[in-house]
Image 1 (cartoon, each protein chain N blue to C red):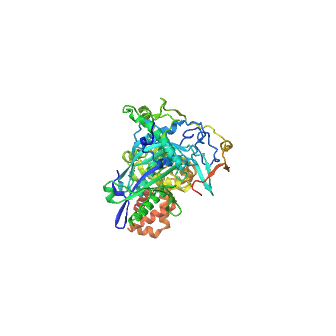
Image 2 (cartoon, each protein chain N blue to C red; image 1 turned 90 degrees about the vertical axis):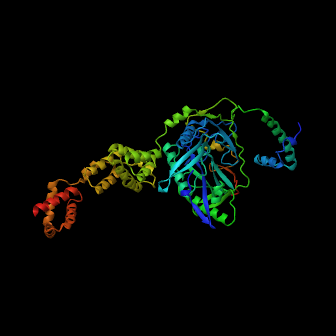
Length: 103
Length: 504
């Protein structure tokens, strides 16, 4: 399959934005490489656009399940100790994380 | 749409700047357990991270399950707001990275919300009605709480996963007062339904107005200004003040040739100003997609009919009924209907005393003036819902008003007895009897008192006998004094006149 001309919408800025959302630091070379690879994935998915779906209702869920719910009954969960057991840092019962806004 | 009659205008630089506000309201749904797991939904006053489980901690492999009660409460709210309930609702993932939701996404509803296209009618000054359209109401999960301390944040996830209803209006609000009126009415409806406590101070009800201004010329071609979202509003007063402040600020900036940035502002309660919270450098990219762990909700017409049948009579219907069926004045009707426990108390009192001959209006006045004054004196703050806990029972106030109507007691005594009833919860007649408060209409007793007064005041007696009738007031005063205010005024006057007549 030939590549980038089929996915002109996937420019390098888009690749950088997606990488940023995924918390990935890409080098310039990687941006070029992934623009090509991701473009192929999109081009493949775009083939689905050719299918006529005029009579198909929106399908947010592929199984025929619906209305799976539970009664509003509380039940005990984890203790504070259990909840915090895997926390890299904890403090007075709280998870401690690096502040997002500086301070 | 609301007309411009109640709109706030700020004139700066010779230009009138109209206010445009849309509102996002988040209301915690009053459930016992969380939205997608069985953890207790109460989080205030508990040790941090003590009401959590693998689901709300976002642990790998943990599966959410929908809380049925939260769904029903949201549909009930939608129906009360006149919304249409589509046949399918779908939960979606809203992706963002912040430690208040450890999954890395919030489960919410996006393309397929539970409720769409509703409206709230609100009373405006001058007897007009304003309409605020509701765009949608959907269900999602609340986030945890973060406390910033030094360079780090402390995270408590007890609140993470508590069910939250988001109610979004169209940009129909044109004045700070209208925004206030809308929120008061919405809060009343939520409390009537029992789906939310309405406590803004505790964060159970949160409101984020989107505020922009525009000129008449912009309005004429349907254009809007850039909107600013204000957060951190912990009271109805703060919402009103923040909107008025932003209206002025934006008008000034624009009049000076500046521009409004699309930003989030916070409300600084102590300084009564908005302050820049976060500048949106790039538009948020939440990458919504249908939640693969939750099958859709299919809402049948029977489901909707069932929930609708369970709705209580709502605030507007009550107000109208008090006015139209019972002849209560709009001012009292509106106050009495404003909180469901108060309306329930009032209706029980009317049921005990009678709905005819203007009795409901008399009862309405006694409840809204005397009873609420006593409640404010002994209650905490001005919360009218505290009426549910007072010692006076509705039928006891009815008995008191019967005693007043039968002229067993006078108005002042009735107020005195009511105050005693608030303290002890006793029946009014027991208090009247024990304290000897009944009006004296026993004519022999009255006659004896009057003759004594004539004797003690020979001068005045002679003058009134000579025709100085203005002294009648003096003698009435003496009779009331002699009977410690318990003489029935009408009987006393008649006896006084007859004894004066017979003596001449």
